Length: 147
View 1 (cartoon, rainbow, N blue to C red):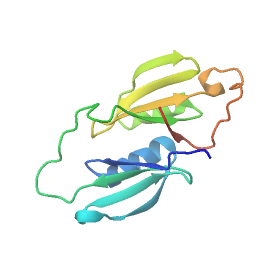
View 2: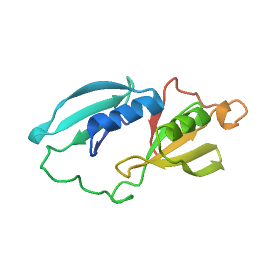
View 3: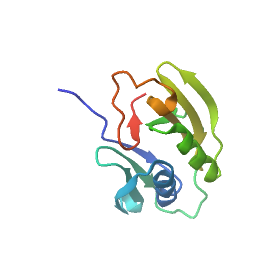
């Protein structure tokens, strides 16, 4: 039996805002959106196999909490086929890619969203410079990586 990650539930300052960004960057779609427990809002955004559940607490009249990078989440990794195309979309969204690196077996960069959540974008395929992705299958749509 093989286990796979279906979803990750994270709290964000605006579930709809974050979902729209992830749709734009990764070509994902909103799978479900609606009221959540305690009067908040949840948006599920991803593909048919996996998604992020984006949770926003009920408005309390106060500014959203500021999240410190790495407390407790270090980053979310997304595997893509075309790293350069996604990086262009990240910059078009007004975000700053950083920490670019080539490593065995792929290439990657990172960016922070409006809630200071760090995303790693990684590619293992031909677009990443690998000569044939040696034994790796490339998924048709970006997926969450388990790193």
